Amino acid sequence: GAGVSQTPSNKVTEKGKYVELRCDPISGHTALYWYRQSLGQGPEFLIYFQGTGAADDSGLPNDRFFAVRPEGSVSTLKIQRTERGDSAVYLCASSILAGETQYFGPGTRLLVL
Amino acid sequence: AQKITQTQPGMFVQEKEAVTLDCTYDTSDQSYGLFWYKQPSSGEMIFLIYQGSYDEQNATEGRYSLNFQKARKSANLVISASQLGDSAMYFCAMRGVRGSNYKLTFGKGTLLTVNP
Image (cartoon, rainbow over the protein chains, first blue to last red):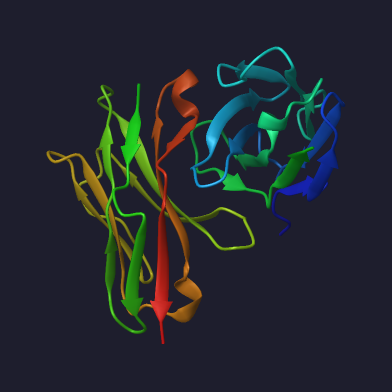
């Protein structure tokens, strides 16, 4: 079956601009996670959704970052006033239930110039 | 807080040989889960194997096995009969088992190169 998909695969933007990153989880998976992976590092947790609600957003670095999952399926990570330090790969994962094995998408590579 | 340490930035192995990738962890939780993921150059994180903290047997999945030593807080990945396609970054990760601990905490990874 189809895995987790993420769009766009690459995004180049200018400092100060707004970006939206989309994640389409595996069908039927109720839990969805966002991670950020900087060069040479392991992924770092940003936010986790159970259904439509954000169950844990403790990893969001500041209030420029926001994520939604309005219908409990597709999620959008929104970054306002982008900074060069936001450049990273943004990974989305889903699991059938919270606490089960997480399956990752291919990521969105964000470059802020 | 949970912490994962992978001390090997890079490892080399000959094709068809076995290789062990090290992972140690730190947590105050009594119950937790340990994972290994593979990340090829394409960037996608591929789930390999899972070990629960209360599992008595070491996990195995095909050519992958997890050498779990709870007292030493280690969860090393063993890949048998290495193949050229095994060349990739490998990440060890930990997850708690209560609500807010469902997030994964990753190590920095080990870059495995399989030589022909």
